[in-house]
Image (cartoon, rainbow, N blue to C red; front, side, top):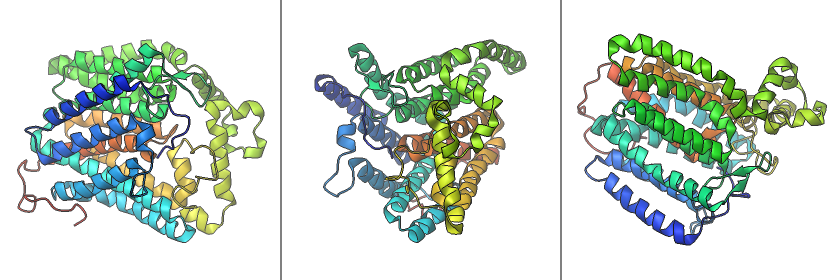
Length: 450
């Protein structure tokens, strides 16, 4: 989880308190007349978005010794294991996750990183709860009812960001010191992932009209631009493609969708010249990297001063992690130095999930992470035809995001991926024509680890 370091200045209490009170009332209404799984899912999203908006409280230690963020995450895992139904989705979530969890436990034990291992296992359990809750919710209440409610929960971060823009309250971006308007949230990366999750929710919503999907897309991308996390804008490209495709499919009759697809492609090609303007220095860095790929293989000592600034310092950071892994012994090559072992050794996290996994869990960990991503992508590729292309673009967007930051390291990123995987599994089982009603073993709440 992101540590509380130089977060955004808080918004004034006279604004925060009534907004949070109104948000609590909204969430209560969103949880009325829906299944327990939908209520759990909506509550998990809303609780995290509310706590993230108040980092001075959520990162503070609770009476139990854990931070309030960690305590709530543990509580949600415990509650979710009792609320969720035993279903066909359980093995589809746990099978690709078990190898990763097993490596976390083994690496933690052998490297003496018990605290980091437990924290990481809780996060993976949290992801499993969100994915299973999403599947159960879709099964019980349908896509439209669940996604409409989830989309409403993002009113809080957008309201907070608007307030920070109006009041001129910003955080200095840690890469270049420029202003990031994130409404009192702790970090521009996690805030941008929250907005990407709102974009994903609109994109997946089958009943949302195309013009409203495009409006949500415009709002979220504008919000990420105000947060000054342009890396997330580049990672959002596949999501935007999926959103445009789903919007066009909903707006035109089936016989006209071929023409609509051609128009979308032409519109995206016309937008290509805008990318360097949006990406700024990051686009120049990518172009430089493409022209000089040997930079990737440099050791940290070989980086010149100019090279260290490329991609906001990411290349130099990656080289430090990779070099440390290479300098380790055979055990570290296989299972790494332990989950969260970077803390206390490096100032910044690796900003790349695979690089971080290589350092923490070794080559086997990278294979396990790729197994999880590939498993879910394979399900998306064979999902119900009406959802297939949208899901594939969303999974690709998540992969791209992991190459420049670490959403799977943040609870906000786990909400994104849990929702996406829950939808993917439901769409895959729908393609397999699984009966919509509960099976004989799915009629009572039990632990998903049963």
